[in-house]
Image (cartoon, rainbow, N blue to C red; front, side, top):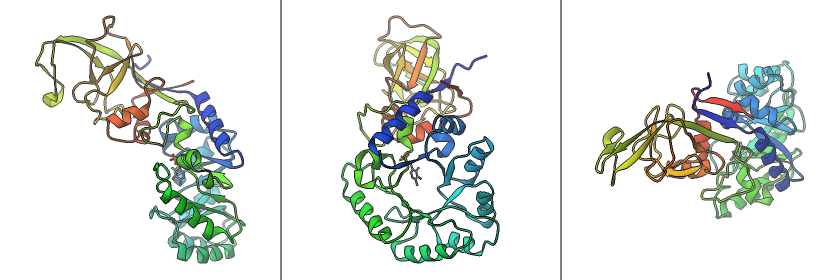
Length: 356
Ligand SMILES: *Cc1c(COP(=O)(O)O)cnc(C)c1O
């Protein structure tokens, strides 16, 4: 039996989007970021489509181990590194690379004895204030890591930008120059750029780029009408009921939408239990037979209601697209007061995944 609510993952679109990365960063090596289950597209699916990249990146040790167990042998960086000796030993065992971002990790690695070697990325905090050594402690951390027998040398140097998707580049350019100034005299490959920086900030490219969201065909910029990237995920369902209601009738929980005329209402088998955003507003567009119609009433767990009044030819069972080609997830995110990252990451287990 095939589920009526499903997401299609277009792996040729991933490859196309990778070609956009290499067009913007022709001289850089690519570390493809596939954390959080490949941004909701499937860790292994995405890793397979990206087999040609120089390295993969995930957030946590478990995700890297999963890739090794699935047979992937390329370089894999764990962006949050390790938090205890056990995790460090796991990273070594599975040949995973670690971002070193804290004094805590530095001490663990210094005290770790004789269990093999690890490749690392030493992270500088340039203003995100999340992970990374501060400017004042970075050189000392570098020297100490250089002394560690278990660390492969030279190791790589990285940072992460906090404002790369702002239209004003002032903060980003400052952060890039801070990084360059600090690593200037140090040996080791350098990495700065996420997707937004790759697309908007040539100064950030360096030896390695770390694209995430753009590989999935989603623009990192709010309000962007981009064309070069191809959406990888499309989310589909079907009309499961059509009914006619009179003027003045409320629809859905708490009756947050009331018909202003007699209305042909459609019920679609998708809801927040599938990952469709609960906060999508009245008027959020939905494609029925390829035509845009508005969401009306609250999103519930298993269903949404839409206004079909304008569609003459429509019947139960007709296909509905929630996002994908022709209706970008970026637009749905705006209607739901969120960012597209959360929507693609949030598809739940109930949704059938079809890989093409
Ligand atoms: C998630 C992440 C990226 C990728 O960011 P996008 O905005 O998705 O391109 C790059 N670097 C680090 C450290 C990350 O955590």
